Amino acid sequence: SITNPSDFNATNIIVFDYLMDGFEFVNATEGYYLTQGIVSWNIHNITKGETLELWIVVKTTKVGNLTNNVNVICDIILP
Image 1 (cartoon, rainbow, N blue to C red):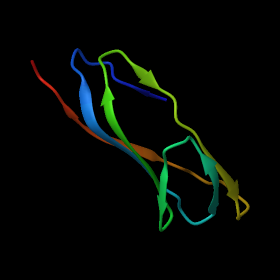
Image 2 (image 1 turned 90 degrees about the vertical axis):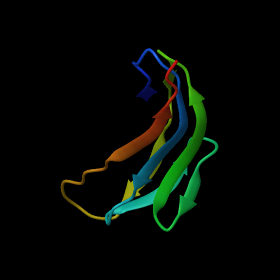
Image 3 (image 1 turned 180 degrees about the horizontal axis):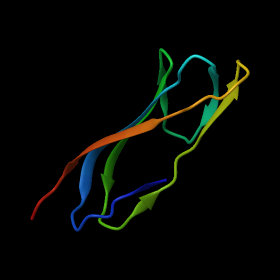
């Protein structure tokens, strides 16, 4: 989930997940883009205090400990 804990609205949000070696994409929350192993969403706005739920389903192609990280970037609208 992505939460905007600030007192300001967040805009132009990009959520992206680089699927590293060992992960194979299966499915994701509606509205995703999949390009060269990167799953991403472009989200127009998350208001102050709002939480957005996104999910990605992958299957593993390797045995062992695997780590996955998701990144979020955005603009903040100041009053």
